[in-house]
Length: 555
Image (tube, rainbow, N blue to C red):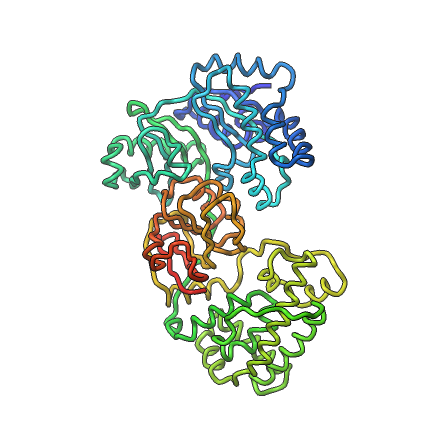
């Protein structure tokens, strides 16, 4: 029922989970990894089953209580205590889920520090129970996994009392070493930004604050250990601790950073008309917006940015009427038949976000301004239809309805067909255009790079990670610190910004693995004119995670 970290079987993440399997490989390769043993993932299946049953009956709290207080299978508890005593006192007891082989789930599950050997069984049950915390369940939902469906191994090792601890990453032949005095826990949990040093391929150490804190020799040693780990087992990221100058690896992984948006800013984006068009496509994105609003609204984008109220009509009736009136507006704006006007509009709208931006701007400037009363009527009809789609269960928020196709929206309202889109939309094709517009016209602030890439979205300030009522897919998540509790939002956020913490936090490890650009240490107080929460109005943010910058305009 237990697997020694030196056993060959321990290298299989299917048995010992991602965290333990990487350390087992490192130990087998001669890297400085502490001894230990693993409670295999399969052993947790009974506890997970009981947790799922309890959650169905009593919710997450019932699942937590059931798993954390349940009995272990025959003989396991005593076997754990005996093995734990052989490792000394105190111990570290850590989750090692199959999900933890990469960075996406960094910080999702519980670890226990300074555990007495006789307390190890209780800590193991606590690790299992962490699969049912509210924020872990949020991550399961975001990743579209069933709660409790993934078994969890648990790793037990001796505890250290480190002089320094931190994380290190190897990228483009340079190792970045981030550290704090003492345990690395405050660093990876997002509270302490740490001190950052860099070690070049030739061994040159830079980073004054890191050298002052840890010394160039220790930074160089951490770099050397990680480079050896990469050569021997392919790990390019680690968590480490140092006692009397001796480095120990606490965690190893291979983080593959997903490619993300790269934005170029052509000179034409300096045109003031661009920012109003960007605001227009933010409000009316997706297939539905492109078909029913943009073809006529591009004639006078500034007129159609305020919210409208729905009408007291049947949603299907409202949508069909909106289609007819929209086509009439297109015909009027383009001074031609409905069909020809729609074709021209569609081509130039595509050109606006492609390589024909200047030509599209010229064409839009020649359009006839649509009848404003009729235009407002169309928007009210569409608002009615969108709310009907929410009521039908097709989407979770009216804004998401724009990402439905017209035929699908009609079918849902007419036939009650199966929902097409609930809460996630993924990357939107207008984002490069929108990001370029905000960068060209926005106010810029500079922070610390945390995850590469460029993104744009509506600012969603999260003051309480336990309550995020305002989040919408493709928002830029903004918080005070990079706490793991924010990670569930990353699966469909466009970017993440924090005012405090540092790039070594688990949250940013998840962001890098998911391809979500991130910046930390950004002074939002200054960037938003004394309104860091953006309460004075909706804010649009473009984020450059590689350069550590963010630009803001009104939404």
